[in-house]
Image 1: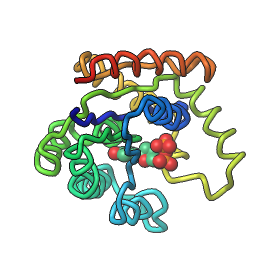
Image 2: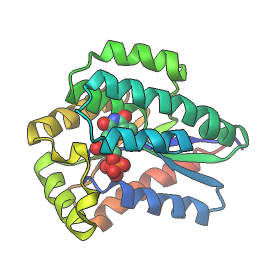
Image 3: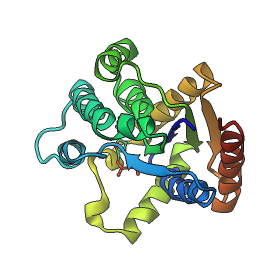
Image 4: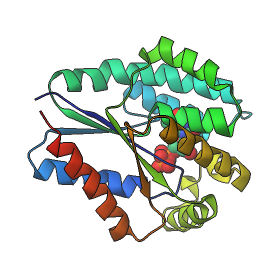
Length: 215
Ligand code: TYD
């Protein structure tokens, strides 16, 4: 059986990470060999870059600097972890991938999409996930959730992007949705404004579809 590369996308506070963990458990319970990873991060180089990206004490980099960092780490992530796992027939679940760069650095920060596509061609060979679950909800709701999450964690849990204004997150949301509209076969949009259980039911429907299509 061949490996599958599945990504989870959506704005901060969309509940994506909770459903990511649950989806991995759901697949493992059905005997599927799942590798979980995330971006920024995923490898030692990626984790070092994540620190530079999210916690930099220096002047904020612009969207192009962010994109260059993210794609460098992404290439390493593919070479070191994602492609070898897929080649062994394992399934790779990744919490964020290139669609995040298109939404955050492209739609959010205004880096021209064509530039990002060009970088993507160079860094990853335009590597596409087999399927992408997009967790969608309005930014004001996402923000309220994010804030209560962070209160539960700690002040250190607040990163550079957490303090962006709502207009930024409106652009990011619209960026994600326009990617989903452009590639309806790859994307499944999950309405995550509902309760955790209702959202989980939508995710499970996608997982059932996914495992039924397994060859
Ligand atoms: P993280 O704490 O991992 O948040 P989340 O649980 O929501 O994924 O922080 C990741 C942040 O990095 C998040 O604000 C989105 C941002 N990001 C980009 O701007 N571009 C990217 O390509 C990626 C992968 C993440």
